[in-house]
Length: 244
Image (cartoon, rainbow, N blue to C red; front, side, top):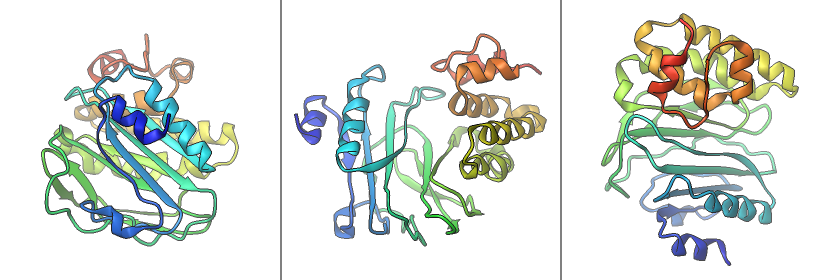
């Protein structure tokens, strides 16, 4: 079954794609470079694993790198899946995000996701991220780093603490994408988590979110950050398990 036909049979709403054809971006307002493919759709059932497998198969067929796909269930019982893939050729990305769309593609719970995609040696200034809260809004989070592909998330309901905490994550977590060796990535991520733990106690829930999304269960247990860790646990549950 074709990929898009599969989406229709699963009653998946709101999907948008681009690949070398900027005119197809309406109403997103993005300015993609050649070689970029972005898929966005909403899953009615978080437990539906077939859609993820089908998406992966589609990406592999196009000979693209699989960067990340994730389901999110937390403060607002989010059910959005976002998939970012990039071409295997080196990209020179100067601007990934464009102007705010005039209308909201879909009413949805608050969630901000920005995708950074870089070729080796490039640098990117992330000047805007989009806030999804029934309409698209602008949140002035900025980061200037030369990094490899990474997906970067923000929960709008925790906005008062987001600025400080995300700067810590931009400084350390994004560095993990630049380490070619697994042991180096683990070391960098552990250091990042130490920074997160040193932040204010009011950020405890968001720290839990970061750990839940960025660590495998066995890593979290090995490092002693979480007891009874479950990758599908809600952030509030994970936060209770965090060692003070």
